[in-house]
Amino acid sequence: MQTDYLEYDAIGLAELVKRGDVSPRELLDTAIERAEAANPAINAIVLKDYDAARRRALRIEAGGNDADALTHGPLAGVPFLVKDLGAAVAGLRMTLGSRHYRHYVPADDAPVIKRFRAAGLNIFGKTSASELGQMPYTEPELFGACRNPWNLDHTPGGSSGGAAAVVAAGVVPLAHASDGGGSIRIPASCCGLFGLKPSRSRQPPSNIEPSPGALGVDLAVSRSVRDSALMLDLIAGDPALMPGAPGTFLSAARDAFDGAKPLDIALVTDPMFAFSLSPEVRGAVEDAAALVASLGHRVEPVTLSIDFAAAREAFLMLWASVAEQSVLHADDLTGTPPRRQDFEIATWAMGHIGRKLGKTALPGALDFQQRVTAQLADLMTRYDVILCATLAAAPVKIGELKPSLTERMQMRAVTAMPVEVLMRKMLSEASNKAFAWAGCTELFNMTGQPSMSVPLAWSSRGLPIGVQFAARDGDDALLLRLAAQLEAARPWFGRRPPLLQARRPMPRV
Image 1 (cartoon, rainbow, N blue to C red):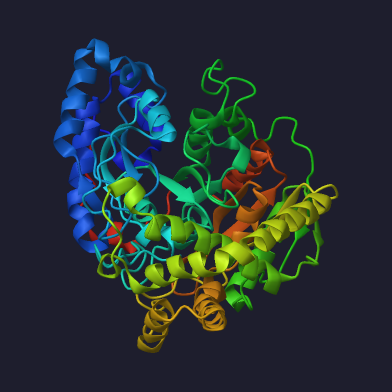
Image 2: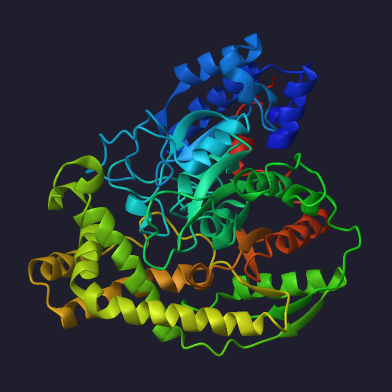
């Protein structure tokens, strides 16, 4: 049977395998062919594990004892790529986008990777991320800039930029991503994909001590809502329930219109950590409000009474504390003492800021996090969902947000002379550049609420613009139901970037 690879999401590909219409090896070979064709342009895949994946695919087809999970899992034989940050894959290098970690090879799988494997996903490589996930764009010095398939001069976002780029380029239908400040939602918005940041409470247990504030979560970026719903079932659902059974996240997405009740939606046009929204983004948010109203939901404009200047400061302190651990205590993982030349200057400076200011400022940041979480929880007693921007503007150009020469000199100075007042000044000035574009997502990392970017708009230049929705902590199923309604009302699955349209006909399996 001749089947167009791009016409299927991950669940669809798995169904083809189960019916015997295609083999896991044929799917993998198609994904590898697409990767080799696209990666020279997008620079998104930083590690290839093709041979091991081919052997795994052949074992699946042979039905060996060690292939049981891959053979019978809900995504058996579907090719998959893992972000080169955070989620360790046993035996595969994990650089975290950093020169220091470029030889680090974890011995064990992270909990989420174990669950991905149990679902039958066939990991064949790793995708690029910003160094230590610090930036909302993906331009690590170790690997070079990752590029957006919708326009190669623009960023795919970050830090999961490589994941979003390979999905938008049609290499895989979904890819692993993680989110500590927007790193699922930002690249999903940039690349015209669906990106759900699940509730903090939905993460699988781990023996790794959580970072201050517990900002980060794992899931994926995908072309379909149901793929992300199934992924959430894999990492957080009831293992006793079959995929798609009543009570699963997949069933919530699949049955989005069954017994659906009108939602009370708070329309927020505050720029949050950003300073203003571009006219195109504001228009996209207002258009999304009209769309959800047309679906029968109630929409009411709301102003968030939050001290966003204090919120930015608290978030940055939490972020710097994470950097301190990853930079100045890097030898905990690698056994090699950290050196300035092995880190980008912005990351190195952030680690030193975390060390210098953490002892005095971190308790206050954690206290503010608790207060703003309570404040949003109170708002969510009156509303089911918050509707707001994902980004303050359409995707920016490659290099636009990188530190200037002056900023780099300031960063070197504050690490050489760690004076608190200078560190605070530099941190504020340098972060304002990133927040001006990517300052709409961090709040929901602080509160732990689920939030998602839905690809509902495109700019006048043909670049994707995602719109963000957030719900109560633990109300991930409600968001997925809403996302599926939006997907049905304004389908995006068939929209393909110019990179695909300009290439030769798509490989078929």
